[in-house]
Length: 78
Image 1 (tube, one colour):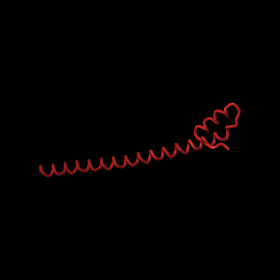
Image 2 (cartoon, rainbow, N blue to C red):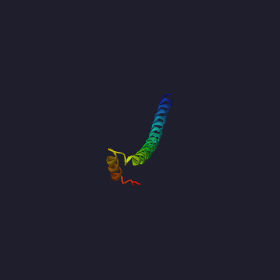
Image 3 (tube, helix red, strand yellow):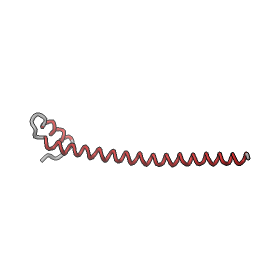
Image 4 (cartoon, one colour):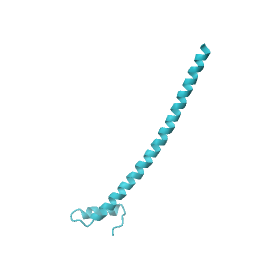
């Protein structure tokens, strides 16, 4: 009986270790995909913001500031 319970405990420990490794692997993949999505989304948001700001560079009072921001970002102004 003793050998049987020891074997069962060893198998249980091995299964838990394997489950933890699989969980770590999937969490790593999820983190990489999340980081890539965050990067792409942020880039698109900044590009959209600069595009919208390019329409307001001739506005009175704030136009010169917007033009400066667009020049720093190296955006071509029509």
